[in-house]
Length: 134
Image 1 (cartoon, helix red, strand yellow):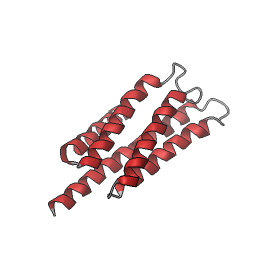
Image 2 (tube, one colour):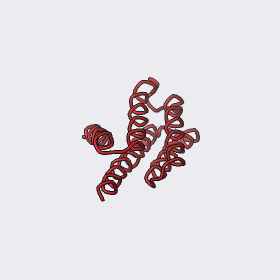
Image 3 (tube, one colour):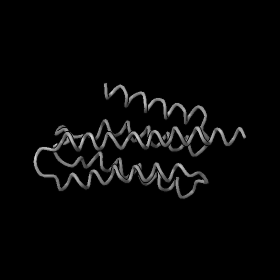
Image 4 (cartoon, helix red, strand yellow):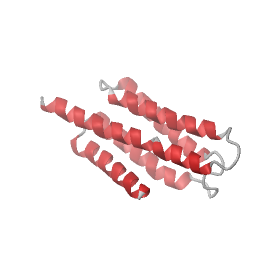
């Protein structure tokens, strides 16, 4: 059930951004879509037994893009998206210090922080659309 909820959230947020968003929303949606696609290719065969360096690299690049967008945008939501992505990066750093078999916690934490970034994009697009109509 969880993968279905994640897929629906991804498709809805990116679809809303491309359908009703402005330039910033479309840029963020493109970055997140590329990041999500790349994430599927860079996860090692260890399945979160250790820090996923490839996934960490994708998350760092996504954070960098969201941060640049937040600094150049006249909207407020990119700052929130960048902050949530920063927390996802910190999960990778925290996994360096894990002891024992906590791969489930690492996986859940990474997946969990995907939702606030996507929801921020969707809600930000909604507010942006309302402002353009007014």
